Image (cartoon, rainbow, N blue to C red; front, side):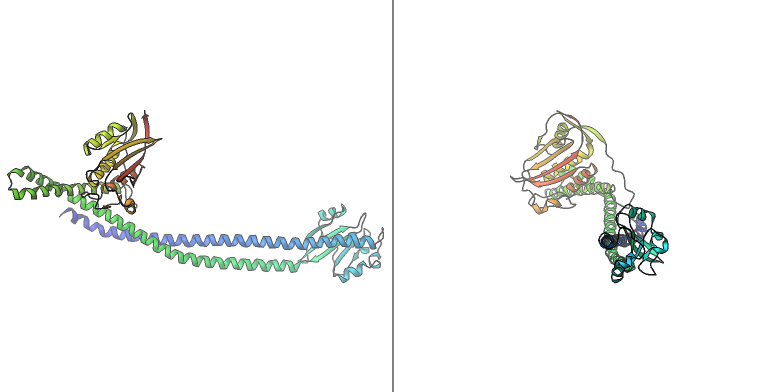
Length: 457
């Protein structure tokens, strides 16, 4: 049985597991969205209702209070002062006409004459003994000559009591106003606002449920795409691994044929040369696919990802770039200030620079290539520039995608994976890589790599 046959049964449980994960993700998103929207609408509506009720109730009660205080001040300070003698006796209230005025204006009044309780004046038989039902604080304010008011309940009915003393020594007037209509109106307002809040909560729950369905569908789609991408990466990794052994054998066999090239007939030599070149390109493609698979393992969600290893070494940038460029493209120009030593991952940096130089050599089709580096604080810039045909502006963002060849005018060859590998290694190092066209023609690809500067002379 082959390795592929042994691995195949595990794909069915894995697919079912991905389906379960996808559906669970959709349900979680829907539930969270419904709860979130409902909670936000509930809190907002309740807060607005409370604020509206508090504002209206304060305004209405304040208006009623101010009107009662002003009326008490006028009745005592003006009418009572003008009509009553200095020493008020029982019967003077009626004799002065104040009683008739109070009756015509439908005022409930209790006048404390300071004599026996039975001698005090009341405007009606249902008027309570005000000094006994109001607070000691209000009586103290009245004795001090202030006009004071407070809310009390008489037989379960809310009343507003406004009191004042006729200067200089009395008597004390207590004006009682039934404010049950105002309180009833506020109670109705409270019910209306509560009902509106409940209605908004229901509408919010419905909107959240509908939005949750859409969000859940979106979450399912995202989960499906993620699962598909995971399956694609696993497939590429498996295929690359399975191809590695036979491709290696093909490379050795092609090399043996190439070694016997002089012994072959002239018509067969070209075929062997093409076969050797194609097999080597196939080997490079498989190696690059395997490398991308290992890099993908460091970021694939939902799997047991391997930890990306970063090994830090002191790197003399000048010597490092000279060595890499000499090995890859000896005719390229290197522009690096001497004495620049940084600490970074030498292996990954070498892979990035090698791929950038190879990309320039492959796609610039023999054009001049310049490799330059410089430091900006703790950021190492490495730029590889060529004088080739460049890349169309609308393709610049795509050249780092896998199997992307931006333009056939930039030469031929290459697998379309080199710059994708550059981006993945840059990601592991916390670096960024960008591309732009030169003003005079050609392409510049620049790496911005965070490093620890050892020396910068």
